[in-house]
Length: 223
Image (tube, rainbow, N blue to C red; front, side, top):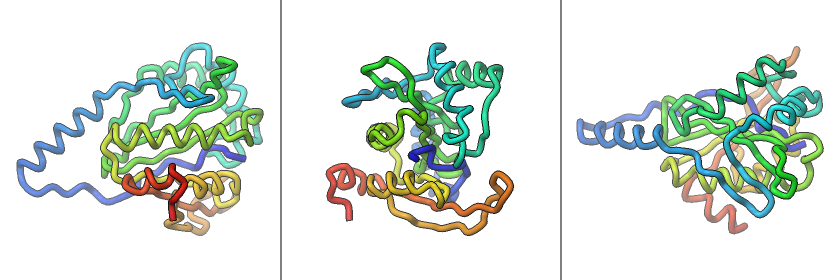
């Protein structure tokens, strides 16, 4: 099932700058990123947008679905925590290094939220970011995750001047693995029993794609 790609970690090397001029330029770039607003992203069938109050019920429904939570770091959510989460995401900073953003996925023909995408610029290297995605069970298997992640990457690379984006996925989540490979992401690592996950040691894959690889991937000619 195409559930969220994995748990969130900090990866990559610290950004090294050479001289005051480079440091000043980097400071200006980071300030611009942190202040960037999130504009709604439209696809043929979907709308990626900020969370709204009306998203509480569908959000709680899939967050408390054991099938959706199977490969996730969470097992459920209380109403109080869901309310706080939705409110937090309505004003969460966009692209601030180290601070994650959850973006609602709305099915346009029904005007209803069916899942969300996760996006985080890495704190120790802001030219890199991590993504994830979650879909309600009834929305899975229809290409919505592929459509949403394609839109997310197409927006994120130029908006934040990213060099590389990664996704971390449970090795047993075969549908999510297939999605990432279909989009042209490359498997760069297999961590064996690196995480104690829901009562057992689990394996994870790290997938990645570079900015100059992404146009080829969405054209369908990625190697």
